[in-house]
Length: 218
Image (cartoon, rainbow, N blue to C red):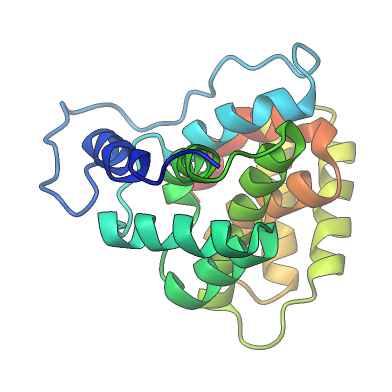
């Protein structure tokens, strides 16, 4: 295990980029983020697209700011048990109001965990996936009227991705219909899609990335 003295410096560097607990930067006005990023469906393996998905989910999004202390606590909690379950539990219990807009920050949290308690390559992917799933569930729980039927959500969302034949319009309409079927707000279609492609049909990560702007506009 590397020296714990690395952690404060890495957290400071992470928060300098993410503005953890600090003043918001004043970005220049930009048009609505409706233009999909250039992502070719078969250009990269799904695992290699995961970091890009995390960045795309956070692009031009204002979300609840995660403090440097919360980042440090997430790192400590995960390193203490060394499992993705501990990171998911931390997000669910300590950060229930943080949603997929914070995905890029949690990409950096995983890098901090790797610096604090070095991970095997497969564990990095596992933690990135766990963070995305739990952030998505946070958003869905915020608008759910009962228990989320997670398996059904995944199956129905993946069916949409298959039937869409890479059409952004069909992906957006289909995921919105899944949200309505489960009595979730229409805007939760994005979280439904993220959770499904991570857990059940990762081959469609590229298609979802191209649809993020339109899904966010619901």
